[in-house]
Image (cartoon, rainbow, N blue to C red; front, side, top):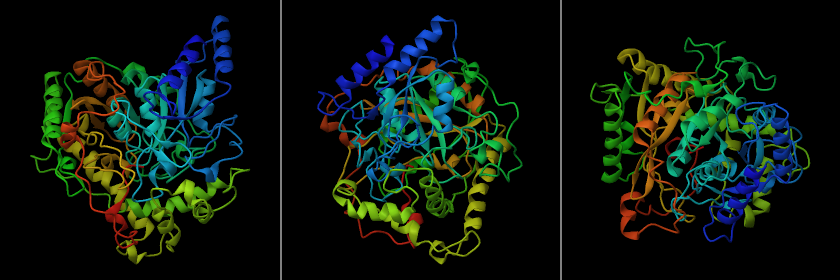
Length: 539
């Protein structure tokens, strides 16, 4: 109980708006947190320990339902009002394991799936979350508050969601370990969705061991009765000859190994580092990543250069169509579970109408062109949508499945690998509410469309800003990835030697190395003809 009150005091001092160094990662504190902590302490005194997180304070992203006094809003006032009627499976598993849900974290509104011009870490309800390494730097998103809070030590661990990059990119930007689980390992029941094909829930922790312990608590080892994916219903990783394992571990900390890289075979790709913008990746970033590659070999791993060997990862060109179609359908199903909020029982159009009527609080900086695009889709699963290159939904889904089979799976099989590795994302940029996010590169797409896991861990710093490395594997390879990432963490101790400073800014002379040149003024809202070229990063 003392521990929890200390976390709350730290949050008030360092996180809340008006503090000398405001991270603004917490959107709401649980009014019952101290009572729950006392209850956990009492159980422990009676010799009852419910799990590795018993009595441990944790934070949940504000798109994960809790059936208590707290709101679940995805950062939008469209979902503000009566709290969710019941816990998400994740929240229920945490409570069953004795964890104390301390509060909810801010996020990119609607998990970065409202506008192509959004700013990561900003929501209408929560405002802008800042990076604890330098408060004018962006925390990435959409699980911005989750990673920033974990990095700033506002809770022992926190939980975010990812569709494509939203756990690992904030992990990279805020210098924490992050686990994006295989789709289906963790239930999405009671989570505000983007796509049932790609969505997952995962932890941020200051160490791989902390994140691994948290994963063991939130996972669903068998069908949870609410999310078909936990029962092995076909998703991105199925149709690939894989099935959901029956021997899913109960404790992932058993795979944490300080010598986890010794004897490992890793496939290295730098392909993503060339960027998906017209801005060149700064040399300082490339140099920092090469130092991380040297650390892999120094720790005993054999590193195979996949690019030099001529191996290429196929693009998941169907991803945006799948997400756009799923979002319209899946969010309607979620709205049906809510009562006493503006969009209860409504559709995506209901949310659009709410935003238009409340533009002063919901759209002061960017619009809702992704929402508008999603409702404009007339396609069914087998109806061609010419605006998306003539692909049907099922064709797009097949392309995404194939990205796993001919990508990560093929690389692992051909080169006898334990995992694929690459840099996670570029370091944090200066937050820009006018022009939006300044991404240079990101590699989460290698695993996003097929629903495969990623473990990201701090790998270096560029002028005081964290840079991470990601370990990618096939479906349900979390044990292997945790072993490798923990081995890298132990060998390098990057975070231990580079803790957050809560600086207001970094020296301006260094910005060129870590922040993009200001982009061109955004053009008019994109149409469906160019939507796939302008896919949001990250969700």
